[in-house]
Length: 194
Image (cartoon, rainbow, N blue to C red; front, top):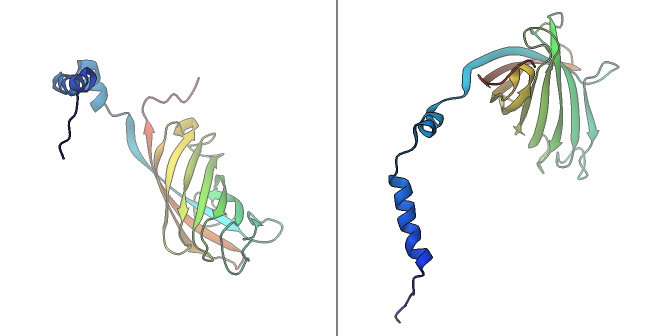
């Protein structure tokens, strides 16, 4: 069986136009824009998140248990945190801000598969008045958890990067201390003040 095609003027010209565009040199301003990097240097921020599970000063709460059963699944559960950001692992170290966010259970297995949305709200120190937004999955609570830095405000406008989060101690049965390493690229062109 033979296939006969009648090419229209549009389909005949399209490859020629594409070939012409690919062969044409880029204007100088376009070439510079394509190679000009907007990022400043990589900034490493090292801090600690202090969390309290129970009591009058609790900073974490389970808002909704899984509809499949609290002891069988994380799916559909919701938790919130308003933890302290401190400069060191000791509770007496300088308070730098708050680690505020929500966790949504996304796994049918208990304790695995959460989606998190976190704001690091800096109230003191070098980044006071600025925030960082972090999002990503938590596939378990052992080892190091990596999540994406997706933006920020103040000194962190147009920020991007990643966060490493690891529990390093449980000073009491109701508390834990987490070490955080943030690796952040910030735009050189973002204005910090108006």
